[in-house]
Amino acid sequence: MLTIWILVFIVAIIALIKGADWLLDSAEKIGFALGLSSFIVGVIIVGLGTSFPELISSIAAVIEGATDIPAANAIGSNIANILLVVGLAAIVGRRLIVTKNLIDLDLPLLAVTTGIFLVVAWDKTINLTEAIILLATYLIYFIYTIKEADYNDDNIEPSDIIPPIIEAPKKSNKITIKDIVFLILGLLSLIFGAKFLIDAVIAISAILNIATGVIALAAVAFGTSLPEVIVSIKAAMNKKYEVALGNIFGSNIFNILVVVGIPGLFKTLTLDTQTFSLGIPMLIASTILFVISGISKHIHIWEGLLYVLLYALFIAKIFALI
Image (cartoon, rainbow, N blue to C red; front, top):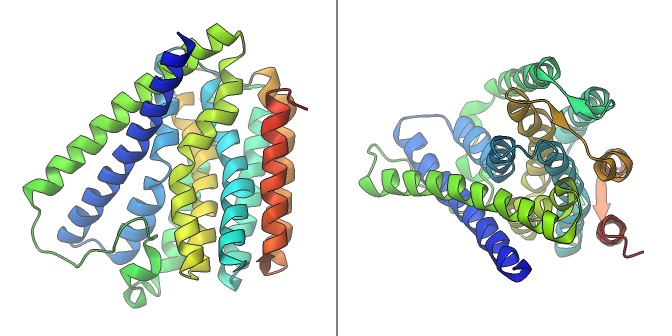
């Protein structure tokens, strides 16, 4: 029975990622066809698109009554994004250059939003009021980001912003049936993938007699972070360092504010013991490490190796392998 549920888990992760990819591709083309700017298409549609698996799976978890999954998923995803994704990108690209724009704007915003999340989650619960605070914080961040980009929006090319998951499309004046079909397929894949993912997590946790939050902190977080892995590694290979790192900043801020905030509107969320005692300290440590690396303006290959090693130790600690 365990083997069957593990297979369901893997297939559900694939459905989530593929669904996000289809949704991303079609939404991007539809956005250009509707005349949306390169910034809106690149940063909003594509940037948020890589976090759809985390969001949809967390909403599905709350519907299923697994209130400890959303926070564990967001915390685990942020740790994976920093230690695993940035680490692999630095190894593949041999080094990552942190631009002045990221240092001046994104690093402080990541630090501040992570701090707000830690204050909210410190009592191991996130209630309706706190969920609204998280979402309001994201709204302020979102508006500020758009205003910062307004002045140079006309000079931005789609290929400069859109992460290289897919080729940046040429602007089109019409929306095709294919775009609509894949938009619907993407949404359906996300919905059903999320449902079966959470069903699998609940079943596996019952069979192994471990908290669902533990699986979310490790396996779900890793699986739903795969889009970020693809984006950042391809960007690093193409030496698009701002895309490789900007993708992580945007995704991490979205995770702790929206992936936690939206499910928190429906039910009070909880943090299980493992998430609080291991996930929270590792989130703090990895964020501080990321900020320090960013201030130094370079993330070298040896730092990337250190990041990946720390992530391996984190996973081993979760499952009491060490």
